[in-house]
Length: 179
Figure 1 (cartoon, one colour):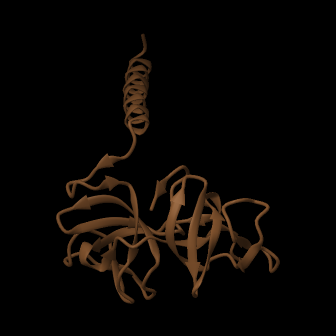
Figure 2 (cartoon, rainbow, N blue to C red; figure 1 turned 120 degrees about the vertical axis):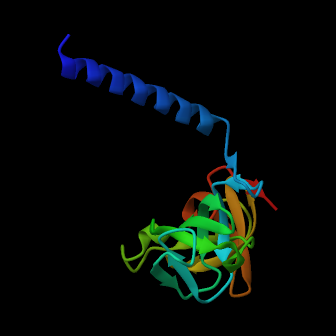
């Protein structure tokens, strides 16, 4: 067998083995971080000024500054008092845990921002597609998440409460239920 072919076979075998392990881990559900909380998980920014760093320490450079408290972010890793987060646009970096809140928030269909003026997420009176519309949310609107059933989430925006389908927000996982 040619030398290069043998190495390729071993590399493919190792990649298949690692992929099988990753699939098994995903099938078991979210893992737990050193804090004992699930990873990944959604939280929100506690402060109106949050530095996103390239590593888990103040010794690392700031790559971005968030200026909006309540913004939902996803924690993907934990290291000491630092949390690696991802925002709705996919930007990743490290934030000190003191700047994060367990309060659940969400963005209305941020992936639809800039796609047109007549695109809305309908907030409904009840968790049913034929329920009356209480508000039309533009993509990117920030909402407080009160609960999710796994298919619908009850949210609040500027004092108005209602239900949106879980697939139309960024801040709750598909099928996730909580109160």
